[in-house]
Image (cartoon, rainbow, N blue to C red; front, side, top):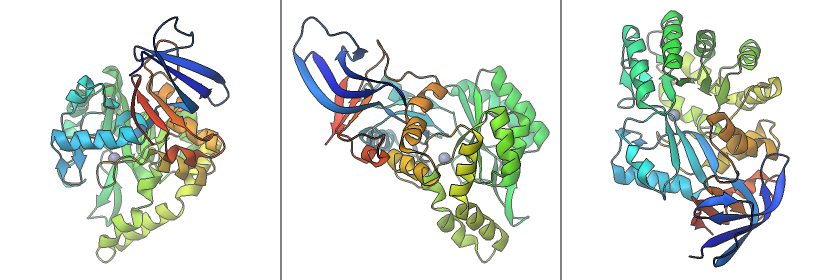
Length: 362
Ligand SMILES: [Zn+2]
């Protein structure tokens, strides 16, 4: 490998700004040409590494997986250009990934917190409302600045989606997370739970299919971000199908949330709610779908540059991680065509560069 990687073309620093070249020296970005060293050149449209803000490494449909499987998941994400993951809950200890230069960076939210029998088996710490506050404190300490709660799930007595937590307990738990320096996000499909979480002071909501005009306004006013995971929402009819006979209200509800998903996210975008790219890989969905999720956002009224921002510059800023800046790790995706013209270009990166090393590409 050459000492210096010279990256030329259009380096997209933000939605508006670009420069013509940068250099990678010792794995880091420099805008000043080095005076010595063997130089290798790559050319194209250059973005900061993609961000999957809702991904699960160390998890499959049955619960925790071994390290080898976790590694394969992280490699699949990396090869698709995802170089920063916000892990939205994992029962496996994946701290070892932080020691590996060839794997994406991971921001963890600890393990999901749910109630007994009110979420997918083997995923979550299952606690009753009395234990929520102490569990949130523990997960805030175990994670990397995020805590993940399950906000709603099918309530079999009700026969429909129902919130897991009373609002008062939630308010206390979120305050404790903030006291510990962590932000809170929650899995919310239906209308009720996301209103409870907003009232309780959450920072973010996953899926958010139950947003209505009133709650959209609240989210905008309180600057609550959403990660819709549209590639996952697309599977709502399959998720709900087994319940059709026994829980017809739930089934209808899920189909309705699914049917209006693009309208819901479009309305949130129009109201100024922050929206970020997340795939929900790891439970039942495969890894590596970050570009598909960006493309999904364009179906909800996002322009290609806006969808890119939701999966690169904007997401990095929101998570407190650098984009393309002097002295920072060279975590870059190089594309053959301009992604601002068509975000689908991101489906097929020319080069994926992680910490200055070309780790994947065509
Ligand atoms: Zn998830």
